[in-house]
Length: 339
Image (cartoon, rainbow, N blue to C red; front, side, top):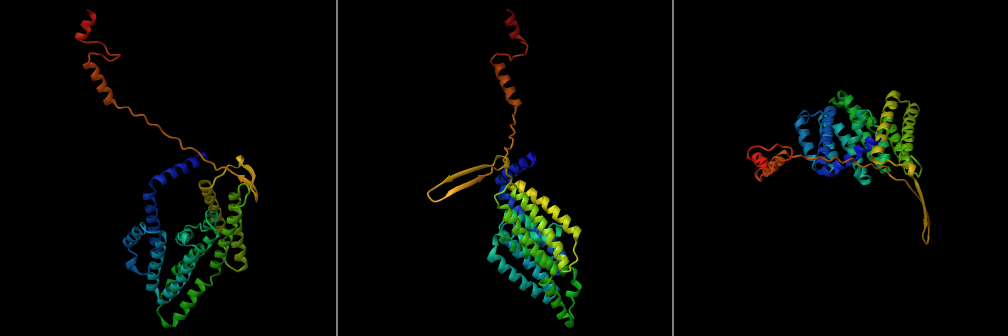
């Protein structure tokens, strides 16, 4: 624990000193990963799958607000969808327009969730999103988290059904539209995941704001259990093939990462809790004060020894006729001392 706290303090000092360079690099890395993942999964226009284009776009995004990365990612997806089929482009455009209107109206400061959530699905730890947002954000973060979930399921379906959606026969146009609508709007698994994430985020947010000891830890455990129960029992109720092992393993890993987030962001020392009571003309106040765990970063003192200065001092003493301590007298100086 002490080592983690020391690393946390060192990281704060490092970020505070070099944030002007670190944040553009992080935005560049995130944008590059997003564009490469999009090209790898729905890269239907071969000219845009060139890594150089993704590199240039990521470089531009590194100097702009993070929401611009979201906009560039949406444009890239729409271009690939247009190369696949006109129906895929139209439905994706309408879906993106509705999501962006809802997102920019309710929670524009959580735009990173639109790209982080699909990446979390790709890594197998999407359950970390509602836990982390419940701890560090507000319930409105459920909106971009839900939009990110919808984007993932849409791209995942398109990636698995490229042959059907790319069929240009006029007779299959109705089939393509129906298939896209069923999987983009009426996908039971997607709707269940959105409901589970929203409920988990709200539960974590409500519990972690309670005035009880270890509220954040209780919130993480309760949120993880609620997420697992909703996903598994919801799969049984909706007749969806539940991936029990994936849900359990992903939820446990997400809970461990959420606990690590708690240690680095909000770590309290409940053994030194204090209760204060005071009043004014209208109210009587009961205050519970819990100190944060802080640790001083050990400072290293480096002592430099310059041998050249020492040699110069010795030479100066020799010129003045004073021999340094510890050196024997030689030549005329020794004869004078003998006389």
